[in-house]
Length: 97
Image 1 (cartoon, one colour):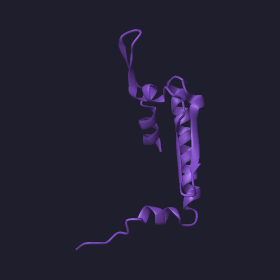
Image 2 (image 1 turned 135 degrees about the vertical axis):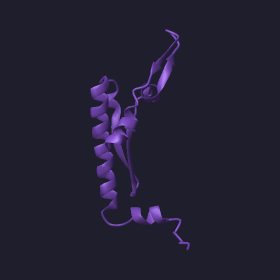
Image 3 (image 1 turned 180 degrees about the horizontal axis):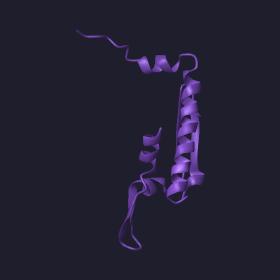
């Protein structure tokens, strides 16, 4: 047995009444959890946490600081020639959602 699924199913669902408001609410909740997770780690970059609605169907949250990738995933410090372990705050945040 096979089923046909409209390839635009995500777009269709995103356009249903109340869905965009819920998506925005989820993005704000994610930003709040991310800020809390960062504050419980070191507090570094907590001020760069944001959430934003995109168009009429999407929203997202994240870190706007240029050093966010290195902070989250880790990086090599050239001055000390050592690897700095990342905080993994994004994965921790998603796990709490």
